[in-house]
Every structure is written in C-alpha cells, then in structure tokens.
Image 1 (cartoon, rainbow, N blue to C red):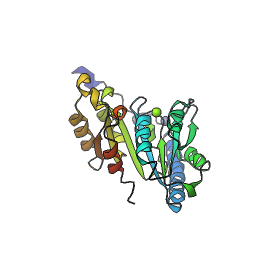
Image 2: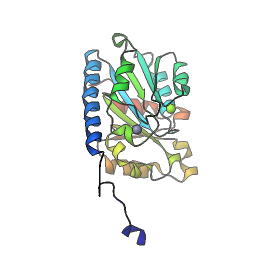
Image 3: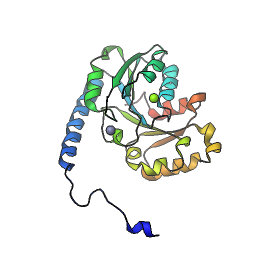
Length: 229
Ligand code: MG
Ligand code: ZN
C-alpha cells in the first residue's frame, strides 16, 4: 500500500502557532471555570451539546425541553454562525432562548457563553442547554463551563464518523447516536458506532435515539443525570 509511505504530519517541520493556540486555550479554560462557578453558585446545571450540522442537536434539545419544561426552569443558548433558525424552533416551546451568533467562528467559547449568561436571570433558572456550532472538531477543545458534555452523531453521517473525530468523543459524558430509524437504509449499525465510541472513551454513556420520532429522549435525560451533582 504505497499511500502509507506518504503521510504528512501536523507536528513535523516548522510549527509556528502552537504557543498562541495554547495561550488561547488556557485563557478559555480559565473563563470556563468562572462560568462554572457562577452557574454552581446559582444551582444551575448546563449542558454543552455538540455535533455536526444536521446531526439532530436542535431536535434533541426540543425533545428534552418538552419533556422537562414542567419540572425545570430552562433556557437554551443557540450557537450559530449567522442564522436564528434553531433559536426560532426552540423558542416555540416557550422557554427562554439566547441566540449566540459566532460570525466566522466555528465553535462556541467560554467568553461567548459568559456574555450569554449575562442575558439571563440565573436566579430564575435550573437548567441551560447550550447548542454548540455544528462541527465535530474544535468545540471539543473549548470548554464552556458546562457540567456535562453531550455529542450527537447520526447514522446518516456514515460508519466512520466516530473514529475520524476521536478528540470530541474523548470529551463526551454522553454520546447520542441519532436517526436510528435510518440505520438500515444507511447500512450503518448502532452497535458499531457504540463500540467505536467505547473504545475511544469507556466513560461515555452511549444512547441510541430517533429524535425526529421522539424516541430515546428519556434515556438521554437519564444518562445526563440532571438531578445529581
Ligand atoms: Mg441545530
Ligand atoms: Zn472552531
């Protein structure tokens, strides 16, 4: 296999942005810790929901909101480059929504979340669901100060989505494998994606779902352990 002899590695040769990247990540981590302290002081739980565009993040959020809005006072932060499509969908469920337009940034960071937190009254909230920007790469690197991190991956993204994005799955407390109703048509097995996830991160709880059909929501909520610390 000739191609194996020709591999370009990211850490070979001149590397000129590593220090900059490290200092950005460090500053982000400090701010994330501040967000977390602020949330804890007010007894508010936050969940960082990550996944590609079209994986079903917004549908999952809508399902969770419908299931929990009588029990908890919920706000949703919607990260998106420019549109309010998702925020509009969530707002229909009668919960507070804060749109975070990131412009050209392909992920949320702790600073954007800190600003969003200033737009809500934490004394009147129990739970914040944060929809990250649709992307399986950098959102994993930028902690927001959430108590739990959830990654949604759908079977329509193909059989290798988990293996190709190990870093974000390493960060996940809960992994939702979505669109199970389409698994057979896609020729993608839930069990394969589950095994791939567990290999990368044995700590993650893997839950199957079909968010469009509101299947799996209760198990996702259980896996998130919203009631416990
Ligand atoms: Mg969305
Ligand atoms: Zn990014």
